[in-house]
Amino acid sequence: MAYLIKRGALYYLNLKLPKHLFPRCHTLRLSLNIRQRQNALFLAASLAQQVHRHLNEHPLADLQTLRKLCSEWRDSAPSPTIQPAPRTAQAVTVKRHVDSPTLASLSKLYIEEGKRGGTWREVSTFEVERALRDLFELMGDMPVVAFDVQQARLLKERLSRCPQYFGLRPEFAGKTLKQVVESGATYKTITAVTVNNRLRKLSAFLTWCKTNGYVADNPLVGMKVMTGSAKEARLSFDRHDLTTLLDLAALKVEARKHPWRYWLPLLGRATGARLEELCQLRVDDFIEQQGIPCLRIDDSREGQNLKNSSSRRVLPLHSGLIELGLLLHVEAVKTTGADRLFPELDAVRGKLGHAPSKWFGRYKTKHGITDPRKTFHSFRHTLIDELRDAGVQDSLIKRIAGHEDAAVTFSIYGSRSPLKAMAEALQRIEL
Image (cartoon, rainbow, N blue to C red; front, top):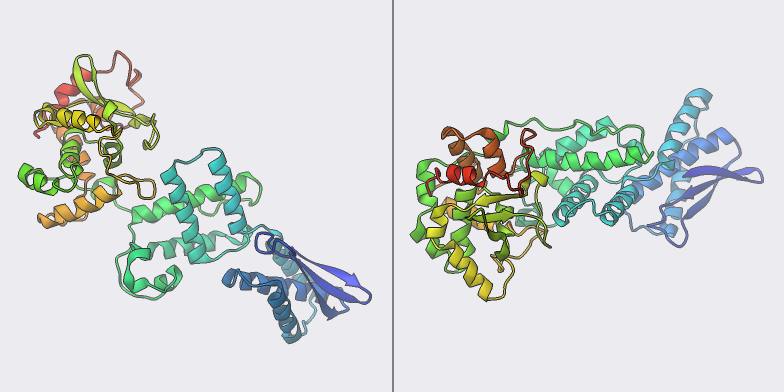
């Protein structure tokens, strides 16, 4: 916060600096060499703004450097023409901004509180921190009350121009994200879906700021870029795609290095499960219920995460998977003492599906399927489309896919779970 103190006939700037940047001494005091209060207030507010701007660009600046800069700014400042009413309003506004905690300081409190309360899974924590990092790299730090609707629009625009894989691409080495975004260069940007996901996470942060009394409004509420429908974002595989991708000879060649390269596409095709749900399967998730071999998708063990509570479900195994030896593979993994079905998968930023997703992208491209809207998730769309075309009841499809359905009132794990109906429905899928 910036305010004046008076010593003798002169006014002094007394500026409180962020404690996390200046833990030992966080007060900058400087004579303004001014006797008139209104002029001193104007100069103090101006100096406070310049200090804040300098810290945004140089957060490691030391106190001595700041004091020297303030002296230079003070000595070069023009003498103000006194206009009492407007200046008072401006001073109040500036003081309100300077008094306000910064986005960076609040983000630390937000993350700490979220981690203490177990608010986010590991992967979600990473995504929240990445969204906040994008905010600071693109906009810089600022008092939270200074982040208004205009700043929110600018953030959305800059996020929309962010490149894919910024940290991994050699052409961006040595450049900041903001420099790349403002360069006008041509490159592949992150998708609108990704932009909106990050805006939602940042909006949740600002909602927390509002709830805790730091701001009156959240300017990111409803802020998003326009997108096509989810149907347009991902395409189903056609018959030729499925024949190509599920060629057993080709998959066996791929699986010489990693067995999951054989089983994951087949499981995706026969269950419609999400890639991460399949990658985190444990050997004891293969169970039998009502005399039917089943696959349990759950989040009860360490390292297992689900998109939502509706994702928790039991799926009958397609007879084609059993004929191909899936259960024999499960038993073989058990004999090694491994807990997970695919123990060789390592989590990257909390996701076991990172390496399989990258591999599948290369695999499908190698076999001539280059449409970016066709991904591993397309197996899920394909199964849902085929079940609908086969006349399967929509509530049953939602249960298989792990989608929420308010009309379904019985438990997934209860005795009334329609496993036989689900098994019959899944058998209509040609593996």
